Image (cartoon, rainbow, N blue to C red; front, side):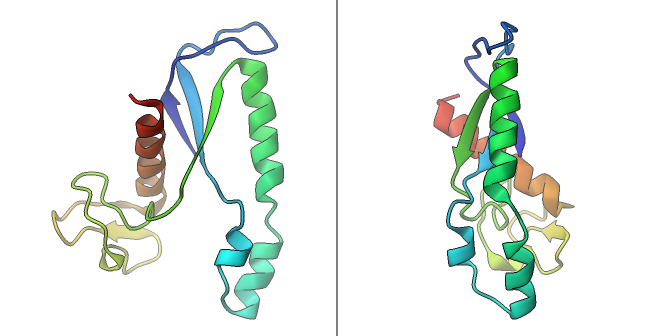
Amino acid sequence: MAIVPSAGGRGKSGRKSEGKAIALEDLLGIRERTKDSKKFNRMMSGWNFRGLASFIGYKAALAGVSLIYVDPKETSKTCPKCGNISSHNRKVQGWFRYTKCGYQSDAERVGALNVAAKALDALGA
């Protein structure tokens, strides 16, 4: 999830969003796309992606904040600094070291930066 600047608006509460939006990865169909071990499949079946997205959408609407879904493709393999995409960028689960430019950061931070960048592209910002 990433919070990005947007055109803004007003929610049901009447509060203005002050130019903010929430960006989420569009995880519709993720269970069908990710076939792995039985342990991994059991873990995935316990996650309620739509429920969480619905709750976030409900709260965002109350606050007048836009909700944007972006394609999650390559968000975990793309360098937010130089744009290089490689599976070699992520040799360790929680850490990224980019082979092209040497940029390093926490995996969750990099994913959020890439989701935010895709949302800004979608908004034309």
